[in-house]
Length: 435
Image (cartoon, rainbow, N blue to C red; front, side, top):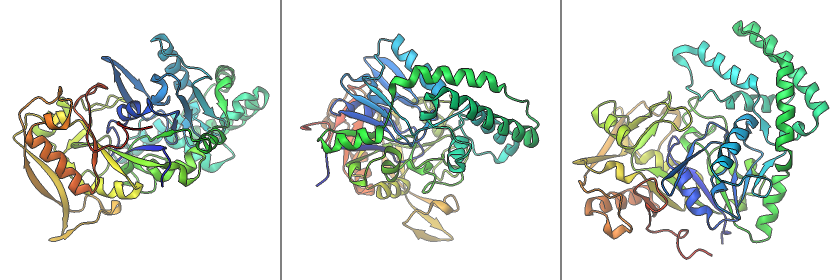
């Protein structure tokens, strides 16, 4: 029998609405833990009409008595973190060692990582990956390189940190000058900045893996908060147009420092349609007036970058693949209200390659085929005030039920707007009667 931990992951290319569901489920969780990604994530939560955009701080921060954890698998940017912490405090949200813990083993995003991101993308030109330029990929590269990596625990030893920054900074300056003709960074300025950041963050730096393992042993509930979406997973996504960490449920044990048994139940978050930011294959993309309508109705512009998202019909093949990959127990169907007012809707139910239909997604060849669509009738009613499933129009209910059939999982949650109150508990085990 699974423990009462919950893992929340995105099943598409990110931006599925994970923040809202993490916020909703966090009310019944003792811990909320980020295990992957970094400040390239953008989780939006709306509380009483007030919008919070979180990038590094877990979404449980808006709940009292919840410990928020940034795990060892996160590429941690202390500059962004302090900006986010101060912004939350200014809005009346308490943030400190009593409700935020940062892994001592999390790798630190340094200024040279962001510079590398920008210089590399500029050099690639039309073949660029389309990163958020937050330095995430270069940080993980240094993690694998080891000798040029800096972890949070090193920010706590000022003398050793100064020596490490001088050493690595000199290497980066020489490299960037040779490769890109870039101007040298002021290493002494970086030393002073990160020593100060270490002093500010020191009370929150802990052995978070041990904390989470003990919590599970003590019967506490942990909610693992994924970043990005499974189709951007470094191993299982549309490589090379992916992020640089393991964002599926497969990444929880390594990224949080817990055994696989701690993953618990998995809630897969999906939009009622599909979106993608940046380059890479996108089979159901609608580069037409329908795609633009979805973009405007869904406010499909990046939380982190502000970039307009590519929009298209729901691809059930993609969601079935990622749901199977992460062992999803139930689905949360987001932004159903965006589809209101459309005469008909389409769902991609399969692919056709050289006249042959295939029913298994291979991310390695995604895009080299024709989509097979199923058409469903739309609905004209405004559903943003619906409080339960029965209040939805018949065609909206039929759409939800068809999604469940195609993915092979119950739709536990239906979201009909950004607010906490615009969340319909349907076939869920987690929003009601949860101890």
